[in-house]
Length: 241
Image 1: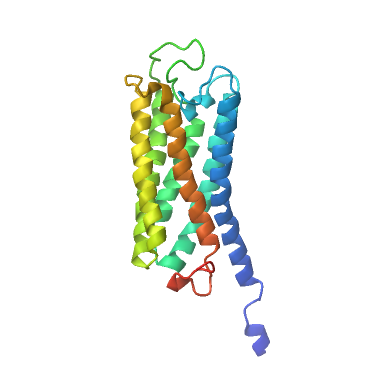
Image 2: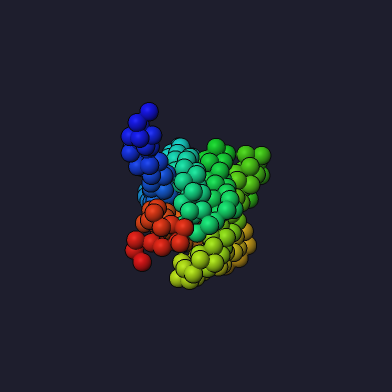
């Protein structure tokens, strides 16, 4: 057999690289799709207040299927990103399974939130009894949502720790700051949705800020990994550095 026949096919590496880039690109697309969709829905839905009501309440009513689809599409995109982030983080920063696993948990949380509709919060849809009765479907929705609101800040800290270990202090600081701000805004969101505090009229606003902060970090991480050079990734050096 000739020496030429023993050489790996030149298209093999680019093919693997192309698949990885496609998966990482899902991490850029997912946050954009999710945020744009719920902002547009919240601004156009009759009887709905983006300042007061949760994003999940958009899944209720006649056009609730649009937000359910938003949850499901975003969940699928972020699940693909979680798969692609594992080899990218391992190669560039020596990261293990925890970061990608937590990102996967966030994706599963979104998928579950799309499958199981929330119970009404406040007075939406119009005519809803206050307080609304609790249902099994609503409880499942809240359980899956917890994967998003708890898994995301932990993912920020885990990935931030790996950034710090490899000398990327700016990236580490941004990741940890995101976790802190996310949790602070989530606390204000929870207080607003309890309907028992002065924050009730702006609970929806705080939730939107929470989601924008968290989804912004995911999109940034995806872009960051897309710019990681494969040939010297083990040193954690980036094209943009």
